[in-house]
Image 1 (cartoon, rainbow, N blue to C red):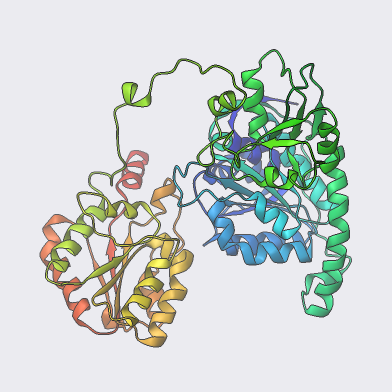
Image 2: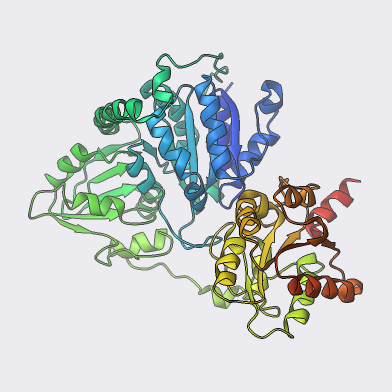
Length: 531
């Protein structure tokens, strides 16, 4: 029986996937995507149907495992944030060539305004790059329905589907009504054409030609999709193309109905035929899209001469940051609504490491040691410990992407930097730091790798960390000498011992690892409350 639930966009996607007959979710936590997997992990249907829901070591392994489940005919879901798609890009692009057996949906959650990210990249470009269909919902209800349909579409066309959410869609709530019936899981079945799953050039060339033909069908499907439609309006002085959540924002500004013709786009490839129909109604078109001006750029080559296209490129809409209802209002020329600046009603609260966090004691000890070394450089990484760059510690010199601390330290050490220190978290180390450490061992780089181990994936809420209890063994297995794998406990009373260990490993001219281990203060509190 259909039910109504108040759900985040992430949770709506998760529920839609479960109701579509999901057999496995594969993911690495990253804001704003984390809640998709967490919702599936806690849902009764997951236990009843034994849906796989364990966190993967990184996004690449998640994508590959989900592809393996699709090969076996089952329906699988991959979840990560937008920069996680960079990590998964190799198997993601390869999956467009292999196609899908069981339905395969890749949920990539973008983060405009960089609330917790290092860039504003737009995952829709990846869809166009791979010649893969992209679904972009405009509401939580549509997110639920779209997730269900995405699995059906994936199997109908034999292709993975990229489903794009953005931060506000992922992390805002609305009432979602579920749809009957809840679909059963697929039986085990293997590809009818096994050759296309072996991407040797002789097979890939055939598959590439087929994918090009199929892409034309994807375009035709988008024109007739129930998620895309063209609505006329009484005022033809302006036409509007509203993509994904932008349609929601548009209608929020016109609760009694938009006076202009509107093309809603939530399924890609972009429905050019509908866009041409819109161009026959108006002379000026405003493009509203969250993220980069993908559609706006495409429209330059679709419309006949004489049609003016406005949007992010000409400054009608803000070029960076989130699209908001207020930004849409300004682009439409509507008067601004009265608001109080955030500075008047909210006290500024810059992010900081938690009081009692072991990272604080580690950075204190590290800074004490490095006062004695002119030219010392510390290469940071992605995690809550990245806040060590900020006052009062100011302990990091770089932070680029997951795993870069180890390899950047190597490159700088080869250039003459000494001491070169890499600081990486336990989860980030098993995500993408291990291969860098192997490179360092193979070249005997003069670096110290400091693994700040808080026994969890702390930045995204305390998910399991893949290397918990095994870091020493992993480092030794990669070739780090056992005597130069040192473990310290970051507490104020241990500062003298901690500093001595760090200093000794700096003075050792080779690869050494210092593991600073103390449980995250937040997970410690949760574990204590459960007991």
